[in-house]
Length: 318
Image (cartoon, rainbow, N blue to C red; front, side, top):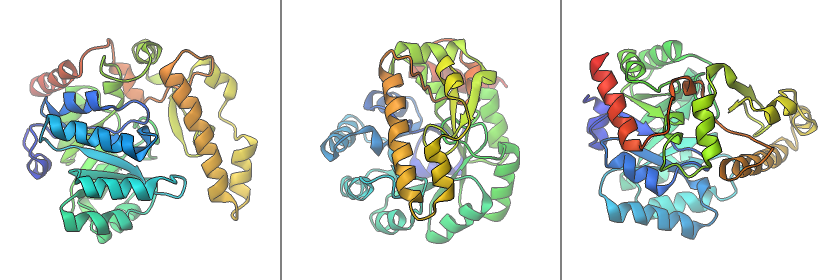
């Protein structure tokens, strides 16, 4: 399964374990690296800079295989500057940028050999980050868990490949080896997989969350703006049904008031992050479980090593 992306990072399989808010941890990262793929962890999973440093150093001490950190680069992330500084100082192998302009990240990382992969949902933004010097784009499609795009992989990937010259990594909708092969045949050099890995013993979330991935199906995944201020895919639990998809008063204010837009969005995001954190780590009636429609193909909770080996086996047999 060699592609230009596997050669770029020196990995066996063209798969990134996606950075997942409140889910990803060092145990998951090491399980991924030890089984032929790479992985990234969100900087926002750590409350302090010291915790982020400890996590990066823990992985570096355990292996020399490449891994990355995901940075939210817009103004809602007040810790962004310090997180970037730490990643550059400790020389992580790559940074995945989300929800903002990656210009500063690219300018600081390229001189020290850190690769920068940028989340994109359309051609305009892909062209912009390519012009800034990004090493690859992560094409977030409409099947992605969390903050999804608005185009299917069948449209988005060929469009990007035709118009940009840097590698395209596809994010969204992959939970089987057959889907992996189909995506690579579209021209993607790698894939980013998240939801599938939540249903593992290594994932740092509650058993209720993991079991929900087994029990619910694709038809139970909905898109809501009421959690983070940006469309987010979540499982349609009874709490989400009660909350609904209509804009709350903060969201309405956000859309009407340009002057205070960034501050209101920050409040919505912080409030939503708290809800997700509570649901991810303990039993609560306010259940907000982030997941993509790929849960349709999750039938049991199993170790990350087994998940990866199953993907490769299915790929070879498909």
